[in-house]
Image 1: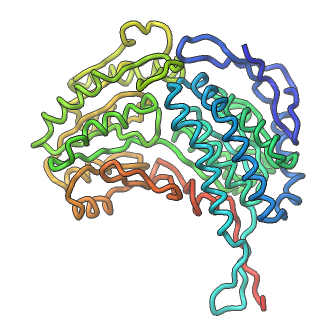
Image 2 (image 1 turned 135 degrees about the horizontal axis):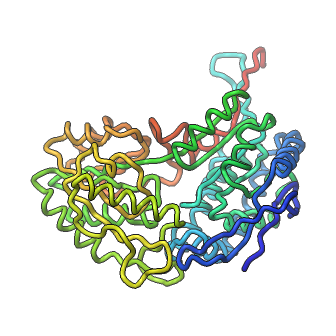
Image 3 (image 1 turned 180 degrees about the horizontal axis):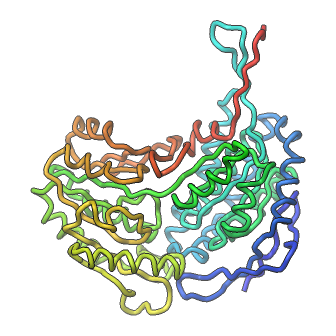
Length: 475
């Protein structure tokens, strides 16, 4: 069993101030494979103090110094890619091939993107036709709170732009999947990150999370997680008028028209089930034009029925377990609610797949005859569960897609490009993907409504960590 009880504060690995152990569980076999410490108020205060005392020097570092640090980090990360993938696979159950091809590589992609953004970003500019100067300064000391489902992706999308902007920070990764962040801290240390710029304290939401979000010396909070937690964080931050960036839940609609390409439904089911359905932008509601609906249900049934489920350490194209017993129980209850509310269970259902009695494994599940008022249509399930809903025309599809508290990512499948453009303008979401086309590398990511505030990635992701000052009379 790995002993990972230390925190990274002020450039050193230090012991927790009090003994409060937490077991990290391998979701494939339910065994304890690592132990961490959950931080106390003293640990949080120590980390925030280090970040605050380092801010004056780091905030005035040059752009070239920050670029050099990130370039060193990139090289180290590339060398330790397998370490990162194996940690993620073990701690949150991503199949090892997915962990290597998508999970771990999301970190290097973020570093590469923000190096590019930083190189072309100007921290001062003259306001056109004026003697006023715009000066872009780091926001300050940042609390970064990240989830377990795409762990290093979210860590990198917060830590890297914060460093690039000249901020200092305290990271609290998910206590369920903390080891990737601890490897990341080792990488930053090896890259020569100045002491106090980056600090890591493990803990849970009620402990270190609440301590950070209400701490008077924190200037900004960037959080990815549940909508409920995002609301609580916003309340915590309000008294000190902290800047808050939130990337929260989703319940994406995948609108499939009868003229969609032949692989659209297969692609949609696989996307929904990818990462075992544990993605906030998963297309979990498949809206299908009625003339194509019965055929689409049959295609979805066959796709789900042939989706393999197995332990994370095995190579191959399969889905792994969900992350924890808590998540497993929640998903089981939601599948049962679909049955109780008279949706048609096409394939899957409650219980574990055959031969997988140990581990948090969920059957790939498809419901048809769903209406948008059902619990499974309105609730973010965060598991491999697809709800299929028929529609008769564009207007009805748009209405169903938007009739949800969330607004993160929606999807359109049609070969009529003008129709796709027309509908995309009416969908209330931060991202609309058409015909399986993913966003460009520098595209911002974030949502409308209960899906969050602000954007990550690209230029807008860098600007999240920047304050703007206007100086008049600048000649």
